Image 1 (cartoon, rainbow, N blue to C red):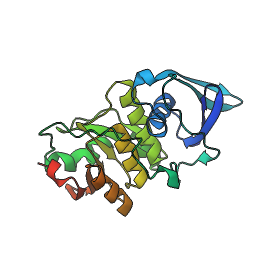
Image 2: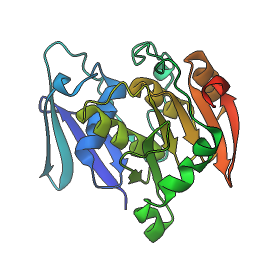
Image 3: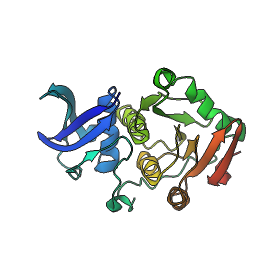
Image 4: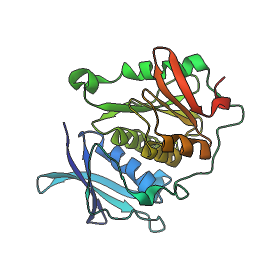
Length: 237
């Protein structure tokens, strides 16, 4: 299922996201991590979901000293996140944090992360047409798994969950995604402060460049017990 979600800041609509309904508060929180100066749950005064004018909405109030998101006059589709040239500078999103000293993940554990996540993809079992994302520790323990028709929305949902739980920056965790890795997935990983990304499919060349620039582990084509490492090989034990 795909339907619009309107995000309103201090009463004014700032964005419309096409998403799979469910976990809308997490989606809004994760979106704010990338699109604004939100870095902790305390930066958000209120997140309130409601139904207005036959449309789902999340009303947002930010703390007074938090950089607000820039309003977007277009609908963000499920096929594309922000998709604009003004997001190529990640300096505002970066925490400047590295994984804890000595942190690594065994190759066999890394290789098994997508299969472990797949066991929790109930919406995919029903439809075959949604993406998933989760955060995983270096010993392979998964956090909550979120699904959405848009792969970037699935990531925003789990980043938002981590924000609300006080887990950001997630420097000792990997972002696991069910699809390919585009630039915007790397952008969201940088905003969450994770150690790296593990994907079922391949990354784009720009995603690889940005992962290397920000010191992220990037593993793609992770399936059947194998994977390709595009960045951060020193973090795989």
